[in-house]
Length: 106
Length: 208
Length: 159
Image (cartoon, rainbow over all chains, first blue to last red; front, top):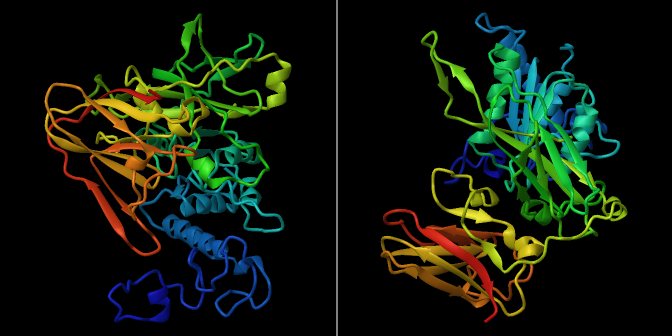
């Protein structure tokens, strides 16, 4: 990830990873060097220029998961009423964050 | 969202005054939820699972906790996700009820009684217990969490119930226990009238 | 999962009846449920039994077990970040194995100082110890030949 962030495309271990553009939405190692679990401080890669929960990487990743659900809901072959979420490790946390921010009561 | 199955995460990241803390979201969950929580996982710790199930609003929840495992499961546990989604997304399965359990301390040796839901073909019931757990609220000892040994007691039949003694080695340490049922279930074959036994057994754990 | 606090155990008159044992594993019945693996289709296994006070090593003990392997092989026995390689001659006879802490070495070749505090015991065909700091590696064992090994009487001996 460090190679990717630095744009070191000639490095032998360079790998293309998910590009969140200007935002730092990774877990560890974070681009900021801050602990992503608790960080809400502003940096040049965060969403808000002031201390904010939206500056936490988990917020951004949860938005990503919710957008994935919205994408699925809009596909004609998908039954939008029957979507489930599974995730492991970081994905386990994201599953809880996604389920806990679901606005539709089941 | 109609169902969720978090594995090895989403229960132990608890920080005061942090809106991205797991407990903030657990308290808002109302959909059916299956927790895949290996008993030695460093990341989603089993003592926090005990707390998490009191925080969720969901009426339908279960857990599968593989004894000895850290941050990985094997098929007999992983399949819990599929049966959960089979039940709540496809409507093709009915998960067995959480067994009724009871712990008695009156005979000098702890005695655990389980009354499992017999609607599925039960292969075995094992009671796993340890005295190497940590008291909730204390700082987690990561190495202990990964290495704690779970003793196993195999219950014998006593009327409609299964009963096992849980002999312990210390009166100075808490006793943690969890019954785990391993079961097979019958799957309808694509050929009408023929029932096949699914090769894959499943293990479910009771938290209460 | 549920918990009973020590005060409750004491108040109820519960007794500590589970005593230390020098027999670590008999390999009988459902013994595999006390061990674990993330590759159930293969024979190597691990356990945390040695971390439990019931199976903690007595002072001066040696780790012993009997092994039978149809073919000659190298059995790798691992303890935490240490490992030992045992030559199995192969055949129908049980082979007695006796190991001291110093028989287990880490990636730098240093012996295990003592059994105190060990957490994980592993039986396997091969493993590689790694030093995450300097990238150094040390290989043990190799490709297993023939049927999986049989084990008997894993125990502490203070002869």
